[in-house]
Image (cartoon, rainbow, N blue to C red):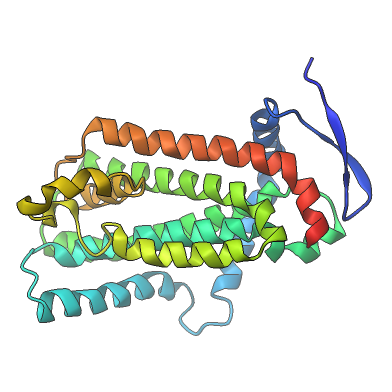
Amino acid sequence: MTEMTSQVDGDLGVIHPSPSILASPIHFYRNIVQNKSMIWNFIRRDVRIRYRNSLLGYIWTVLQPLLLAGVYYFVFTIIAGQEEELYPIWVLIGVITWQFFARSLNGSITSISRNANMIKLIYFPREIFALTTVGSNAIITGLSLLVVIPFIFYYDLPFGLHFLWLLAGLSISAVMALGIGMMLAPLNTVHGDIAHLFQFITKAGFFLSPVMWTLRMIPASRSDMLNYILLNPMVVPLEMMRCGVDGSEFQIEMAWVAYSIGFTLVSLLLGVIIFIQTESKAVKYI
């Protein structure tokens, strides 16, 4: 039988059982299943709140990445003379994907501290907040991807099963952001510098990752840099997303795909364990 310990929830003075390390993933899964309606309601709330006071409302989900991609297109294609025909759509997909990852990651890291008032009122599984952040950003990203439809017709891109690459790329990005975010959320309640650090990291990663450029744009003379670039686990989902739109062949070696997926799954496992084991202590600092 799994050994259980008890921890006192510092915010409410209520004793809640804390599972063992090995039982933490099962505890996490059970909480998701038992609270799926609450998670969905929180996701819908977050999506509504994000655009509640804006004149254009949900149009911003399409307009924001389109405007940002337009700026990069102007700088790199018109001014710098980038000659790749599909460059505008490559940039657009890169921007949408990276924004999804960055917002999900940073939102998950601050998921406990941002919801301090609600946590102090009533007890329920705190991992719900991180799941809500990723879920609401996934919906907004899905709406943002509608902007690529006119580009598909304009460039006469094919329709087919390659669209499944979009699902694969978004899934890896979501799980990676959730795992890393849950790993750091308890620590962020003690040291708020974590959130500021990762806001910088995601901004720097925007330029270091193939967002405004692609792997095929790396000159042959610098091909030795490819293995170093692929150490970034977000490279694989970014390339998956582009292949899912333009129908091109996915050319990254399976070993690097396995590395990215492995990094993602390990991040989720560690994130779940660390979060479940430490969140009841972390809420004492909010």
